[in-house]
Length: 453
View 1 (cartoon, rainbow, N blue to C red):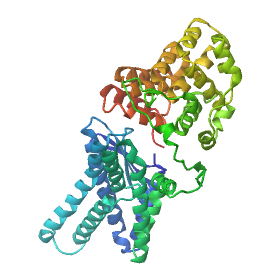
View 2 (cartoon, rainbow, N blue to C red):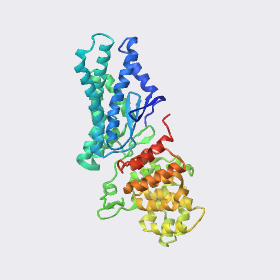
View 3 (spheres, rainbow, N blue to C red):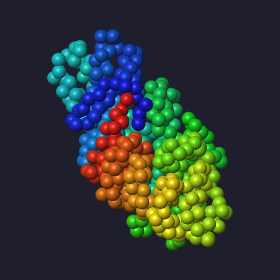
């Protein structure tokens, strides 16, 4: 999402378009520096139309995969928002589509220019169309964080190295961005440096990856209150995926849930705050960075309950626990002891005041630990009682399992219960399914409940 201010809204070729006030103001300020007042309006219109053409290239490319995005012009550029994360090859095609539409427009104007009437204002407009479309297209092909070239470079690493290529790909983009920004200062092209800084502020991942590879401290610095992630030991994160149940295997054996990697703990904290927003003082103020650094506690009392197979006591303990990290520890103990089916059976049979709370926490923990099939079982017991957040989490687990039908059904139930805004993590999980008409329609209904302000 962009931090764009309110602006002009309309539909173009079926795509929702928003032209933010911030975009118009910044374009106006840039134009004031280089042209007389009579051509300010012409400059703003040319820039808006040119960047809109660029974003339409992305939008039509998304349409090839049955995805219907929205377009926003904001700040110093544009953004095409789909809510889906495409595989690397498709993502590269979508990223290339913008420049490959804008640059030909500039070439077409260059070819036609000798036949156009000489002088102003047509000559000025033609020159601006060539400059903006050609400049924006070339700039976007550079490996700069937040621009199309940066996305293309990262996805090329993913194609070459698989998932392991994400961090080095991001780091390479971060390094190129820094080098280009410094070089632009030395050659007097400070505007390019400003652009890189602007887009880097909203796309910090490449710089975070570069800092990690460069060895930026034990815990890493913080930017805007968000801790920079640290690389995790290979023994924690190296898994071989077998079958469709989404469960991690490490060298032929189950990965110990109690040793869940930092990314799993962070995912748990985010899902906990999203699914139990009113339960929690501690979850709402949860420091996700601290959660990444601290392992789940061993909880000797829970170990004793589990060893005695006292599932009702475990369920009660789970329902009454308020520390999110302790909740994750309880679920880890349950998974490690292979008593998830027994606990689900207990919660299915026993109607207690704590049943819903226990099931919600169990669903969150199972999903975060990669036990998607078990998380779906918990969601089935909850049904409509779990509310819209539980339905969204069910959709995420179903998407990770590749179950399109259940993903769509869960999203439709979430909309019927209480339409909620989907987080980036939720959209990322659902995007794993790839294009699906019913899922896309359900997402569109949810998105329509929260129009852009």
